[in-house]
Image 1 (cartoon, rainbow, N blue to C red):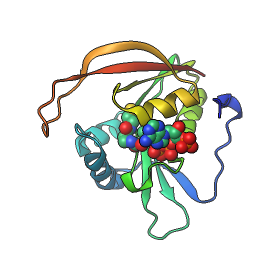
Image 2 (cartoon, helix red, strand yellow):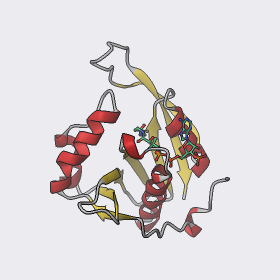
Image 3 (cartoon, rainbow, N blue to C red):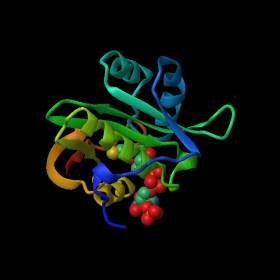
Image 4 (cartoon, rainbow, N blue to C red):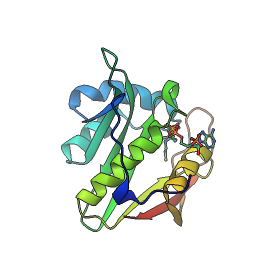
Length: 168
Ligand SMILES: CC(C)(COP(=O)(O)OP(=O)(O)OC[C@H]1O[C@@H](n2cnc3c(N)ncnc32)[C@H](O)[C@@H]1OP(=O)(O)O)[C@@H](O)C(=O)NCCC(=O)NCCS
């Protein structure tokens, strides 16, 4: 599938529902975060993002009660350029299209905030994330050297970030 023009993107779907992230979501969000990243955001990072007024949204399974958290994103939206700071899907919900669904929502919000582009950073080793960003139309825009902290777990050295950009 090629990238869809974002202005025509449709993400209406009865099986899952977006909601603005609340402080009451932060514990569950940070728990997913810890389970999928070697250098996860902390609860404090999410609280700070909410306090700063960033666009932070959760995606939950709509049909189940209580509705499990499938994923979330944090977008710093500005008139010129929006920065996608975090986009994540719970490990047991990956590979089901939720990542692309979150990405569409984030890009739509960027447009609503009158951004003309969205940028993000991604690890060169994160092939799944690179695949969905490229598929959505993001293109390599630069490199931030030694951007990601080393993992405490395996004592690796810092990893570069690929900067990707999408014109919206
Ligand atoms: C990256 C991430 C957000 C993708 O979300 P997802 O819900 O798993 O992705 P989707 O199901 O929407 O998959 C979209 C596409 O990714 C690609 N993809 C899926 N699994 C892949 C894999 N193992 N390797 C490479 N590409 C893969 C495919 O193009 C897939 O589409 P298709 O299977 O329909 O052809 C999610 O895997 C995740 O949260 N990973 C851990 C956190 C992370 O890396 N976040 C991004 C930081 S920049």
